[in-house]
Image (cartoon, rainbow, N blue to C red; front, side, top):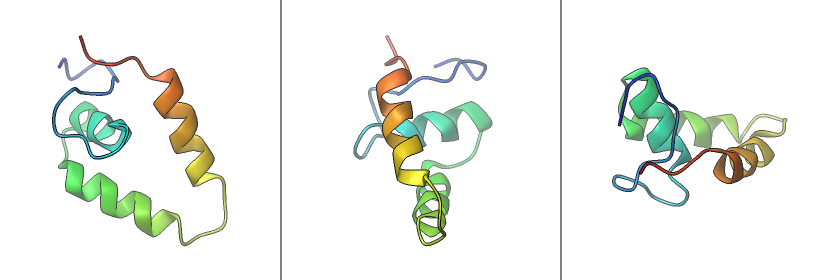
Length: 62
């Protein structure tokens, strides 16, 4: 996967691949992005809805 393209990978994914795609895009570990997402869910806001939207809108890696 290219470092300049945001897409959901076919490997290293847990549910939808959104966190793994964000991690690959920014060069951090997928575990770190997943933990940050889970911690952010403790705060008020639309994090879960944003995740669902990204799952639907991000293209899957070819």
